[in-house]
Length: 482
Image (tube, one colour):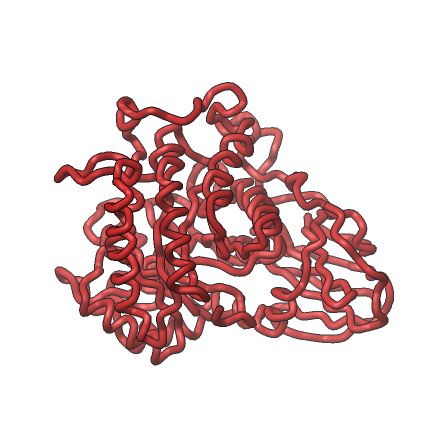
């Protein structure tokens, strides 16, 4: 739909009106800040769903040319898998007449927003479980019939889950008893047992459980790679940053959809580690390298839900989000503006290109010794230089020398290759020499653009990338080799 020449850039946790001592954050300054860093969608998920907030958000989004994707109350009825507190039936217990009546409410609730120029679709759900998928898929088919061309967002959680989260979503987190009285369609045992070595078996059963039921034009997941999982390894990167980007790219290719990845904006919980520019750059550039359609930023605006949480004190005062609890921009704004400005010149080209696959060169060093670190609990989740086997590509024709590990993604557009080269260290500069096949290339780095014949010698800052566009002779017909 909208903004086809730019990456999806959505904030999860929207601006809010004045609320119990929290100032109004629906101001021009807030929306101008979001616009400057490339935000083009606002997901309405959050606790300020007052009609006046929704109305003002639509008006501000129209003013700043940002798409707004509201939530509607009827969505919750499709997601209900247990009886409600007031005796409301779960979705699968509704009669056909009750489902028809729900569909009518759902359509009417959305229709009240379609006259707003900034209406871009709906934020349907976040991190629901397997048992809700029939309801989600039904709602998606109703939505497609009545609102073609608009977006429907239903975000997945990652593979770092428990049995209760698999079935019931994040609402069941910490509630192992919630499933006791329920009949489950299959057992999470054997090769579906939820443990790390089975992650792509049970996770694939989960994801296919929804994607196979209805067409989803956009898909996403969230796993934040720089949380403080290992306090003694403050430069660790969770391997899911690579694995889940690769996995969702493959799903997007299978279902002809677009995928985006949720980006971590700071540390919202109290943590010893602080997010660095290299980490912000790394998560963005790895996502781009795997052919994503863009990003969702969490938290975009610091959420009201956490306004009084003791553990969130640092986060709400600038340690997380683009806009803090007082409505002020944080340190992450200039970081993402710089990265967005870097990507602007080639975003359209890359979005129109086909990913052939990725490869790595060099030895990974991110400030820790793997032989020591691998003895830690769950250390298999720490990235230490091994890209996943998914989407590996060895026919780029590129040769590389580097002082640290780089990732090279090869794309093709109109018969010509493009390369996206990422410094995989979030800590160290990387001195890189690249020799490319053929001649005539345009190179885009963070702070400069230039032409070369066939050799590049440069230094990539931590987590940073460069984009190489072959302007020379047309290549032979190229097809993915995945």
